Amino acid sequence: MNIEAIFTKAWQQQSAWLWLLLPISWLYGGIVWLRRLSYRLGWQTRYQAPVPVMVVGNITIGGSGKTPLIISLVEYLQQRGVKVAVISRGYGGNEAIMPALVNAQSIPSQVGDEPCMIAAQTGAPMAVCPNRQLAIETLLIEHPNIDLIIADDGLQHYRLARDIEWIVVDEARGFGNRQLLPVGYLREPISRLQRSTVIWHQSLAAAKSASDQPTKLTMHLQSEQMQPLIHLEGLGEIDTLPTALLESCQRVLPPKQGQRVHAISGIGYPKRFFDTLRGLGFEVIEHPFPDHYAFTWSDLLPFNEHPIVMTSKDAVKFRALISQLIEALRVEQAWVSGQATIALKEAQTVSKEIEQIAKCLGRVWVLPVQASLSASCYDVLEKQLTTLNVHFTSV
Image 1 (cartoon, rainbow, N blue to C red):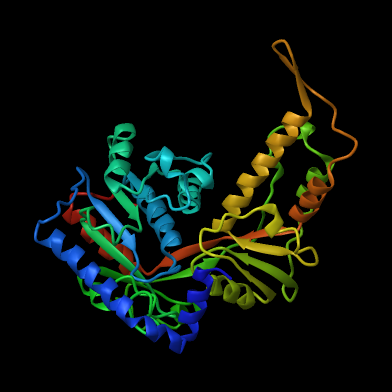
Image 2 (cartoon, rainbow, N blue to C red; image 1 turned 45 degrees about the vertical axis):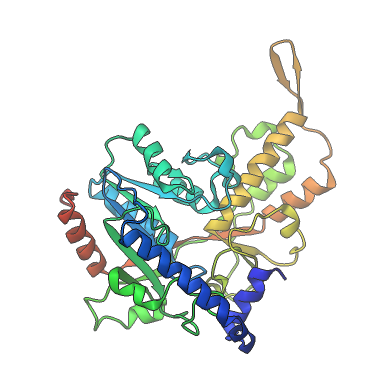
Protein backbone atom coordinates (compact mmCIF):
# COMPACT_ATOMS: atom_id res chain seq x y z
CA MET A 1 0.00 0.00 0.00
CA ASN A 2 1.53 3.34 -1.06
CA ILE A 3 1.43 6.54 0.95
CA GLU A 4 -1.53 7.93 -1.01
CA ALA A 5 -3.62 4.87 -0.20
CA ILE A 6 -2.57 5.03 3.46
CA PHE A 7 -3.69 8.63 3.85
CA THR A 8 -6.89 8.11 1.83
CA LYS A 9 -7.89 5.26 4.13
CA ALA A 10 -6.96 7.29 7.22
CA TRP A 11 -9.02 10.28 6.06
CA GLN A 12 -12.02 8.07 5.36
CA GLN A 13 -11.78 6.51 8.82
CA GLN A 14 -10.71 9.79 10.48
CA SER A 15 -7.88 7.92 12.18
CA ALA A 16 -6.65 9.39 15.46
CA TRP A 17 -2.97 9.27 14.44
CA LEU A 18 -3.58 11.99 11.86
CA TRP A 19 -3.75 14.58 14.65
CA LEU A 20 -0.06 13.97 15.35
CA LEU A 21 0.57 15.80 12.08
CA LEU A 22 -1.25 18.96 13.18
CA PRO A 23 1.94 21.13 13.25
CA ILE A 24 2.48 20.25 9.58
CA SER A 25 -1.11 21.30 8.81
CA TRP A 26 -0.49 24.63 10.54
CA LEU A 27 2.66 25.14 8.48
CA TYR A 28 0.83 24.19 5.28
CA GLY A 29 -2.02 26.58 6.14
CA GLY A 30 0.44 29.40 6.77
CA ILE A 31 2.07 28.86 3.39
CA VAL A 32 -1.34 28.86 1.64
CA TRP A 33 -2.30 32.10 3.41
CA LEU A 34 0.98 33.80 2.53
CA ARG A 35 0.73 32.79 -1.12
CA ARG A 36 -2.77 34.18 -1.45
CA LEU A 37 -1.77 37.35 0.38
CA SER A 38 1.24 37.90 -1.89
CA TYR A 39 -0.98 37.87 -4.98
CA ARG A 40 -3.69 39.96 -3.36
CA LEU A 41 -1.17 42.69 -2.41
CA GLY A 42 0.58 42.55 -5.75
CA TRP A 43 3.87 41.15 -4.45
CA GLN A 44 3.49 38.49 -7.13
CA THR A 45 1.85 39.26 -10.46
CA ARG A 46 -1.06 37.38 -11.93
CA TYR A 47 -1.43 36.47 -15.59
CA GLN A 48 -4.59 37.99 -17.08
CA ALA A 49 -5.60 36.13 -20.24
CA PRO A 50 -6.96 38.16 -23.17
CA VAL A 51 -10.18 36.11 -23.06
CA PRO A 52 -12.40 35.28 -20.06
CA VAL A 53 -11.21 32.39 -17.89
CA MET A 54 -13.45 30.13 -15.80
CA VAL A 55 -11.74 27.91 -13.22
CA VAL A 56 -13.46 24.72 -12.10
CA GLY A 57 -11.82 23.07 -9.12
CA ASN A 58 -12.20 21.82 -5.58
CA ILE A 59 -10.71 22.43 -2.15
CA THR A 60 -10.34 18.77 -1.29
CA ILE A 61 -7.95 16.00 -2.26
CA GLY A 62 -9.64 13.28 -4.28
CA GLY A 63 -12.38 13.19 -6.86
CA SER A 64 -15.38 15.50 -6.57
CA GLY A 65 -16.93 14.96 -10.01
CA LYS A 66 -15.09 17.92 -11.50
CA THR A 67 -14.15 16.33 -14.84
CA PRO A 68 -17.68 15.11 -15.75
CA LEU A 69 -18.94 18.57 -14.79
CA ILE A 70 -16.46 20.24 -17.16
CA ILE A 71 -17.46 17.89 -19.98
CA SER A 72 -21.14 18.74 -19.48
CA LEU A 73 -20.36 22.47 -19.34
CA VAL A 74 -18.32 22.34 -22.54
CA GLU A 75 -21.02 20.40 -24.39
CA TYR A 76 -23.71 22.81 -23.19
CA LEU A 77 -21.69 25.87 -24.22
CA GLN A 78 -20.93 24.35 -27.63
CA GLN A 79 -24.65 23.82 -28.18
CA ARG A 80 -25.25 27.47 -27.29
CA GLY A 81 -22.72 28.74 -29.81
CA VAL A 82 -19.91 29.61 -27.40
CA LYS A 83 -16.38 28.88 -28.69
CA VAL A 84 -15.02 27.23 -25.56
CA ALA A 85 -11.57 25.73 -24.94
CA VAL A 86 -10.06 23.89 -21.99
CA ILE A 87 -6.67 23.98 -20.27
CA SER A 88 -5.26 21.58 -17.70
CA ARG A 89 -2.08 20.91 -15.80
CA GLY A 90 -1.81 17.58 -17.61
CA TYR A 91 -1.09 15.58 -14.48
CA GLY A 92 0.47 12.23 -15.32
CA GLY A 93 1.68 13.43 -18.72
CA ASN A 94 5.16 14.20 -19.96
CA GLU A 95 6.01 17.74 -18.85
CA ALA A 96 9.06 17.75 -21.13
CA ILE A 97 6.79 18.11 -24.18
CA MET A 98 4.46 20.70 -22.65
CA PRO A 99 2.80 23.01 -23.48
CA ALA A 100 1.00 20.59 -25.75
CA LEU A 101 -2.28 20.59 -27.61
CA VAL A 102 -4.65 17.71 -26.88
CA ASN A 103 -6.93 15.94 -29.33
CA ALA A 104 -8.80 12.65 -29.66
CA GLN A 105 -5.58 10.87 -30.71
CA SER A 106 -3.52 12.04 -27.73
CA ILE A 107 -2.31 9.45 -25.24
CA PRO A 108 -2.45 9.68 -21.42
CA SER A 109 1.28 9.10 -20.90
CA GLN A 110 1.97 12.33 -22.82
CA VAL A 111 -0.84 14.70 -21.80
CA GLY A 112 -2.62 13.04 -18.84
CA ASP A 113 -5.73 10.88 -18.55
CA GLU A 114 -8.36 13.53 -17.79
CA PRO A 115 -7.32 15.77 -20.73
CA CYS A 116 -7.57 12.76 -23.06
CA MET A 117 -11.04 12.04 -21.72
CA ILE A 118 -12.22 15.65 -22.10
CA ALA A 119 -10.81 16.06 -25.62
CA ALA A 120 -12.19 12.73 -26.82
CA GLN A 121 -15.71 13.39 -25.52
CA THR A 122 -16.08 17.07 -26.42
CA GLY A 123 -13.73 17.74 -29.34
CA ALA A 124 -13.02 21.14 -27.77
CA PRO A 125 -9.63 22.81 -28.29
CA MET A 126 -7.42 21.89 -25.34
CA ALA A 127 -3.88 22.46 -24.12
CA VAL A 128 -1.94 21.16 -21.13
CA CYS A 129 0.95 22.60 -19.15
CA PRO A 130 1.75 23.14 -15.46
CA ASN A 131 2.27 26.79 -16.45
CA ARG A 132 -1.31 27.77 -17.30
CA GLN A 133 -0.15 30.94 -19.07
CA LEU A 134 1.82 28.87 -21.57
CA ALA A 135 -1.19 26.58 -22.04
CA ILE A 136 -3.44 29.54 -22.83
CA GLU A 137 -0.93 31.16 -25.18
CA THR A 138 -0.51 27.85 -27.03
CA LEU A 139 -4.29 27.55 -27.40
CA LEU A 140 -4.74 31.09 -28.69
CA ILE A 141 -2.06 30.67 -31.36
CA GLU A 142 -4.02 27.76 -32.86
CA HIS A 143 -7.51 29.01 -31.97
CA PRO A 144 -7.52 32.84 -31.85
CA ASN A 145 -11.33 33.14 -31.88
CA ILE A 146 -11.98 31.45 -28.53
CA ASP A 147 -14.74 33.08 -26.44
CA LEU A 148 -14.05 31.34 -23.13
CA ILE A 149 -11.36 29.18 -21.53
CA ILE A 150 -12.26 26.68 -18.82
CA ALA A 151 -9.38 25.70 -16.54
CA ASP A 152 -9.68 22.11 -15.37
CA ASP A 153 -8.61 22.44 -11.75
CA GLY A 154 -6.11 25.26 -11.16
CA LEU A 155 -8.09 26.63 -8.23
CA GLN A 156 -4.86 26.85 -6.25
CA HIS A 157 -2.87 28.13 -9.25
CA TYR A 158 -3.13 31.70 -7.97
CA ARG A 159 -0.88 33.09 -10.69
CA LEU A 160 -3.73 32.62 -13.15
CA ALA A 161 -6.27 35.44 -12.89
CA ARG A 162 -9.78 34.17 -13.31
CA ASP A 163 -13.11 35.81 -14.08
CA ILE A 164 -15.29 32.98 -12.74
CA GLU A 165 -14.60 30.35 -10.09
CA TRP A 166 -16.72 27.27 -9.60
CA ILE A 167 -15.86 24.97 -6.71
CA VAL A 168 -17.31 21.46 -6.67
CA VAL A 169 -18.14 20.01 -3.25
CA ASP A 170 -19.10 16.37 -2.79
CA GLU A 171 -22.00 16.48 -0.33
CA ALA A 172 -21.77 12.78 0.53
CA ARG A 173 -18.07 12.94 1.28
CA GLY A 174 -18.17 16.34 2.94
CA PHE A 175 -15.05 17.86 4.47
CA GLY A 176 -14.00 14.99 6.74
CA ASN A 177 -12.44 16.34 9.93
CA ARG A 178 -12.41 19.83 8.34
CA GLN A 179 -8.62 20.09 8.66
CA LEU A 180 -6.01 21.08 6.12
CA LEU A 181 -3.49 18.63 4.70
CA PRO A 182 -2.15 16.30 5.95
CA VAL A 183 -4.42 15.97 9.02
CA GLY A 184 -7.45 16.29 6.74
CA TYR A 185 -7.98 16.32 3.00
CA LEU A 186 -8.63 20.05 2.59
CA ARG A 187 -6.34 21.92 0.22
CA GLU A 188 -7.71 25.22 1.45
CA PRO A 189 -9.89 26.26 4.42
CA ILE A 190 -13.65 25.95 4.08
CA SER A 191 -13.89 29.76 4.19
CA ARG A 192 -12.54 29.67 0.63
CA LEU A 193 -16.05 28.73 -0.54
CA GLN A 194 -17.35 32.18 0.39
CA ARG A 195 -15.58 33.83 -2.54
CA SER A 196 -16.71 31.44 -5.29
CA THR A 197 -19.71 29.78 -6.89
CA VAL A 198 -20.23 26.45 -5.13
CA ILE A 199 -21.69 23.47 -6.98
CA TRP A 200 -22.93 20.80 -4.59
CA HIS A 201 -22.36 17.31 -5.96
CA GLN A 202 -25.21 15.17 -4.67
CA SER A 203 -25.89 11.49 -4.84
CA LEU A 204 -28.56 10.41 -7.30
CA ALA A 205 -30.96 9.66 -4.44
CA ALA A 206 -30.39 13.09 -2.89
CA ALA A 207 -30.86 14.80 -6.23
CA LYS A 208 -34.24 13.11 -6.73
CA SER A 209 -35.47 14.37 -3.35
CA ALA A 210 -34.12 17.91 -3.72
CA SER A 211 -36.99 19.34 -5.76
CA ASP A 212 -37.87 21.62 -2.85
CA GLN A 213 -34.61 23.56 -3.37
CA PRO A 214 -34.91 24.86 -6.95
CA THR A 215 -32.31 27.62 -6.49
CA LYS A 216 -29.57 25.43 -5.04
CA LEU A 217 -26.66 24.87 -7.41
CA THR A 218 -26.37 21.10 -7.64
CA MET A 219 -25.15 18.31 -9.88
CA HIS A 220 -25.29 14.54 -9.83
CA LEU A 221 -23.74 11.80 -11.92
CA GLN A 222 -26.05 9.72 -14.05
CA SER A 223 -24.83 6.30 -15.22
CA GLU A 224 -25.11 5.55 -18.93
CA GLN A 225 -25.21 2.25 -20.77
CA MET A 226 -22.14 0.06 -20.36
CA GLN A 227 -19.77 -0.07 -23.31
CA PRO A 228 -17.19 -2.69 -24.26
CA LEU A 229 -13.62 -1.48 -23.79
CA ILE A 230 -12.65 -2.66 -27.27
CA HIS A 231 -14.62 -2.00 -30.47
CA LEU A 232 -14.07 -3.45 -33.93
CA GLU A 233 -14.67 -0.08 -35.59
CA GLY A 234 -11.84 1.43 -33.58
CA LEU A 235 -9.22 -1.12 -34.60
CA GLY A 236 -8.60 -0.10 -38.19
CA GLU A 237 -7.85 -2.82 -40.74
CA ILE A 238 -9.03 -6.03 -39.13
CA ASP A 239 -7.36 -8.42 -41.56
CA THR A 240 -4.03 -7.97 -39.80
CA LEU A 241 -5.39 -8.59 -36.31
CA PRO A 242 -5.00 -11.83 -34.32
CA THR A 243 -8.08 -14.03 -34.28
CA ALA A 244 -8.18 -13.90 -30.48
CA LEU A 245 -8.62 -10.12 -30.55
CA LEU A 246 -11.38 -10.32 -33.14
CA GLU A 247 -13.20 -12.92 -31.08
CA SER A 248 -12.99 -10.65 -28.02
CA CYS A 249 -14.70 -7.85 -29.94
CA GLN A 250 -17.61 -10.11 -30.77
CA ARG A 251 -18.48 -10.86 -27.14
CA VAL A 252 -21.07 -8.14 -26.78
CA LEU A 253 -23.10 -9.23 -23.75
CA PRO A 254 -22.53 -6.89 -20.78
CA PRO A 255 -22.68 -8.16 -17.20
CA LYS A 256 -26.18 -8.66 -15.87
CA GLN A 257 -27.77 -7.24 -12.75
CA GLY A 258 -26.94 -9.41 -9.74
CA GLN A 259 -23.72 -10.67 -11.32
CA ARG A 260 -20.38 -10.44 -9.54
CA VAL A 261 -17.91 -8.06 -11.20
CA HIS A 262 -14.36 -6.86 -10.67
CA ALA A 263 -14.50 -3.07 -10.31
CA ILE A 264 -11.28 -1.30 -11.36
CA SER A 265 -10.88 2.31 -10.31
CA GLY A 266 -7.92 4.67 -10.49
CA ILE A 267 -9.84 7.84 -9.66
CA GLY A 268 -9.62 10.24 -6.73
CA TYR A 269 -12.62 8.83 -4.84
CA PRO A 270 -13.13 5.21 -5.96
CA LYS A 271 -15.85 4.55 -3.38
CA ARG A 272 -18.30 6.56 -5.50
CA PHE A 273 -17.71 4.27 -8.47
CA PHE A 274 -18.09 1.13 -6.38
CA ASP A 275 -21.29 2.44 -4.80
CA THR A 276 -22.66 3.31 -8.25
CA LEU A 277 -22.15 -0.28 -9.42
CA ARG A 278 -23.84 -1.62 -6.30
CA GLY A 279 -26.71 0.76 -6.90
CA LEU A 280 -27.07 -0.80 -10.36
CA GLY A 281 -27.46 -4.21 -8.75
CA PHE A 282 -23.98 -5.71 -9.15
CA GLU A 283 -22.01 -7.64 -6.57
CA VAL A 284 -18.77 -5.68 -6.50
CA ILE A 285 -15.24 -6.92 -5.90
CA GLU A 286 -13.35 -3.68 -5.24
CA HIS A 287 -9.95 -2.98 -6.77
CA PRO A 288 -9.01 0.63 -5.91
CA PHE A 289 -5.83 2.07 -7.42
CA PRO A 290 -4.20 5.48 -6.80
CA ASP A 291 -5.59 8.46 -8.69
CA HIS A 292 -4.06 8.82 -12.20
CA TYR A 293 -2.53 5.35 -11.85
CA ALA A 294 -0.46 4.18 -14.84
CA PHE A 295 -2.11 0.83 -15.55
CA THR A 296 -0.41 -2.09 -17.27
CA TRP A 297 -1.84 -5.39 -18.50
CA SER A 298 -0.48 -7.11 -15.40
CA ASP A 299 -2.99 -5.12 -13.33
CA LEU A 300 -5.87 -6.65 -15.29
CA LEU A 301 -4.89 -10.23 -16.10
CA PRO A 302 -5.28 -11.70 -12.57
CA PHE A 303 -9.02 -10.93 -12.60
CA ASN A 304 -10.07 -13.83 -14.81
CA GLU A 305 -13.18 -15.18 -13.09
CA HIS A 306 -15.75 -12.43 -13.59
CA PRO A 307 -16.48 -9.46 -15.87
CA ILE A 308 -14.34 -6.37 -15.29
CA VAL A 309 -15.87 -2.90 -15.13
CA MET A 310 -13.90 0.35 -15.09
CA THR A 311 -14.44 4.10 -15.32
CA SER A 312 -14.14 6.16 -18.50
CA LYS A 313 -11.07 7.84 -17.06
CA ASP A 314 -9.29 4.50 -16.65
CA ALA A 315 -10.55 3.27 -20.02
CA VAL A 316 -8.54 5.91 -21.91
CA LYS A 317 -5.35 4.38 -20.53
CA PHE A 318 -6.28 0.82 -21.46
CA ARG A 319 -7.38 1.90 -24.93
CA ALA A 320 -3.94 3.44 -25.38
CA LEU A 321 -2.43 0.11 -24.32
CA ILE A 322 -4.64 -1.66 -26.87
CA SER A 323 -3.43 0.67 -29.63
CA GLN A 324 0.18 0.01 -28.66
CA LEU A 325 -0.47 -3.74 -28.62
CA ILE A 326 -2.09 -3.73 -32.07
CA GLU A 327 0.66 -1.59 -33.56
CA ALA A 328 3.31 -3.94 -32.16
CA LEU A 329 1.49 -6.94 -33.63
CA ARG A 330 1.22 -5.32 -37.06
CA VAL A 331 4.90 -4.45 -37.08
CA GLU A 332 5.73 -8.00 -36.11
CA GLN A 333 3.53 -9.39 -38.91
CA ALA A 334 5.03 -7.27 -41.68
CA TRP A 335 8.33 -7.06 -43.50
CA VAL A 336 9.77 -4.34 -45.68
CA SER A 337 11.30 -4.96 -49.11
CA GLY A 338 12.50 -1.82 -50.87
CA GLN A 339 9.62 0.67 -50.66
CA ALA A 340 6.87 -1.92 -50.32
CA THR A 341 5.52 -3.18 -47.00
CA ILE A 342 3.87 -6.55 -47.36
CA ALA A 343 1.53 -7.69 -44.61
CA LEU A 344 2.20 -11.30 -43.77
CA LYS A 345 -0.58 -13.74 -43.06
CA GLU A 346 -1.52 -13.92 -39.45
CA ALA A 347 0.76 -16.19 -37.50
CA GLN A 348 -0.79 -19.53 -36.57
CA THR A 349 -0.03 -19.00 -32.95
CA VAL A 350 0.02 -15.88 -30.84
CA SER A 351 2.20 -15.57 -27.79
CA LYS A 352 0.70 -16.79 -24.55
CA GLU A 353 0.62 -13.28 -23.11
CA ILE A 354 -1.22 -11.90 -26.15
CA GLU A 355 -3.78 -14.70 -25.91
CA GLN A 356 -4.35 -13.91 -22.23
CA ILE A 357 -4.84 -10.23 -22.97
CA ALA A 358 -7.20 -10.96 -25.85
CA LYS A 359 -9.35 -13.28 -23.74
CA CYS A 360 -9.38 -10.74 -20.93
CA LEU A 361 -10.52 -7.90 -23.22
CA GLY A 362 -13.71 -9.75 -24.05
CA ARG A 363 -14.77 -9.36 -20.40
CA VAL A 364 -13.86 -5.69 -19.89
CA TRP A 365 -16.60 -3.05 -19.79
CA VAL A 366 -16.71 0.68 -19.23
CA LEU A 367 -19.40 2.47 -17.22
CA PRO A 368 -19.68 6.06 -18.51
CA VAL A 369 -21.28 8.71 -16.33
CA GLN A 370 -22.71 12.07 -17.25
CA ALA A 371 -22.97 15.11 -14.99
CA SER A 372 -26.51 16.41 -14.75
CA LEU A 373 -26.72 20.01 -13.52
CA SER A 374 -29.68 21.76 -11.96
CA ALA A 375 -31.31 24.45 -14.07
CA SER A 376 -30.09 27.09 -11.62
CA CYS A 377 -26.48 26.22 -12.51
CA TYR A 378 -27.08 27.16 -16.14
CA ASP A 379 -28.94 30.31 -15.10
CA VAL A 380 -25.97 31.44 -13.01
CA LEU A 381 -23.52 30.52 -15.75
CA GLU A 382 -25.39 32.56 -18.35
CA LYS A 383 -25.52 35.60 -16.05
CA GLN A 384 -21.81 35.33 -15.27
CA LEU A 385 -20.83 35.00 -18.93
CA THR A 386 -23.16 37.79 -20.06
CA THR A 387 -21.38 40.10 -17.62
CA LEU A 388 -18.15 39.16 -19.41
CA ASN A 389 -19.73 39.83 -22.85
CA VAL A 390 -19.82 36.14 -23.70
CA HIS A 391 -23.27 35.69 -25.21
CA PHE A 392 -25.27 32.53 -25.91
CA THR A 393 -27.22 31.82 -29.06
CA SER A 394 -30.89 30.95 -28.61
CA VAL A 395 -31.77 27.27 -28.28
